[in-house]
Image (cartoon, rainbow, N blue to C red; front, top):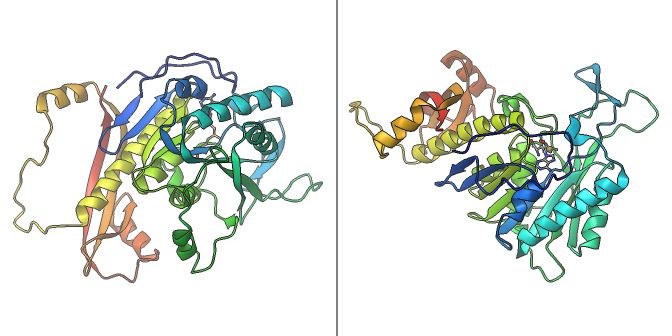
Length: 370
Ligand SMILES: C[S@@+](CC[C@H](N)C(=O)[O-])C[C@H]1O[C@@H](n2cnc3c(N)ncnc32)[C@H](O)[C@@H]1O
């Protein structure tokens, strides 16, 4: 594991520092690689035509000291220095640079999705035209419960745009049309997607000021890639793309510059890996009623223990896995302080009608090996 170092975060524009080719986190089993650094420098060090799908949620350049409404209170729109505008020309130059880097990395039939509000999305679309991407769709991500507009001088902002484009005119991009139709109750899926913003459960590792909902990312990934494909997110923030890709059995490469966002992302991803592993194990669950105890690990003990002595505790949690009576699978899982609250949450969930065989409780402490 490479040490995470503090970097200057003054500008969203690339600093060209290429101390970048080594991931700060690498899970070889699920092939998840996370890099810390400027995305331009990291992307320059990656091999061309190696990525199947890119989701990019770049700085929107909207942190302009305005106000908005959050939880009924007037708050600043500022998200951080990384989101400040540098002027239209510099912003556009930056968008063109990272989009060109993404285009180099895409396989011939690969595609890219970029989200944004009006502050950035027109520049992104224009840069894509300049670089001769093939524009496929612009999705309207509609927020069903947007904050009210406090100035009363505009319509309430209730949507973001996500442009979907293929590498170039010759690309034969992946589109899982049937799957999308099936997910839309048998009707062709439209380009208007109402999706709720991330709820409390998705923010339990700490929230990112621009965090996207998992449901949005899972749809993007399922629509335009296949299992085992490599998904890249050059502006990973709170790690939503990485978690969604792992859930959809895709491999992941994420890049983020900020120390604080990166640590939250690492706790989120490591907890997710435990969840994915538990779900997979439980699919063929074997009732070990005699409770034979045995060491099920297959690691080289000395190396693993040495690494853990200095490891950093990134997450401690108690999870409850509800296993169904008929299909011996985990039908519901939840993080809760005790069984009582776990049962309450299960009863309030859409799975409450499923007959339960047993509940598996796990206490998890996750250490990142140094
Ligand atoms: C809009 S947020 C992404 C949020 C993410 N989609 C999520 O769901 O959590 C953009 C992120 O890009 C990071 N960032 C800004 N400029 C960057 C650069 N040049 N290289 C790498 N990361 C950068 C910021 O620190 C921020 O976390």
